Image 1 (cartoon, rainbow, N blue to C red):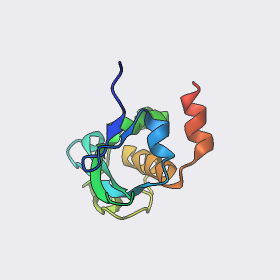
Image 2 (cartoon, rainbow, N blue to C red):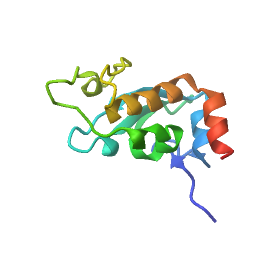
Image 3 (cartoon, helix red, strand yellow):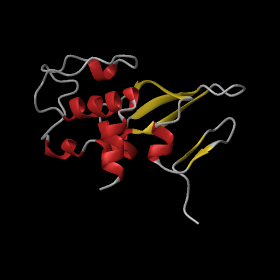
Length: 128
């Protein structure tokens, strides 16, 4: 028996895979908790808006890399450098980095796909 993708720490509802999780209307992406030293070890912050639950929990960014494989073509993270505009440090910011080669820009792209529940992108990836 394979493990579930995620389990709510409060009500213990489970999601069998990433599409189940991403399309659940009771899951709201509320922000990003960055890890400046190791950005892929940062977290997306979700709230489970189910009646009687309302738990907030973290899911590591690297668990969603399949949504945006472009992240592997970007050469560096520019967080905390003079070129960084600081959007990744802001938990609630949905602004996108203007630096053309920053991997953090691709993390924001994943966040946007999750936030909009872009079914076309997620389903296409699920079928590959």
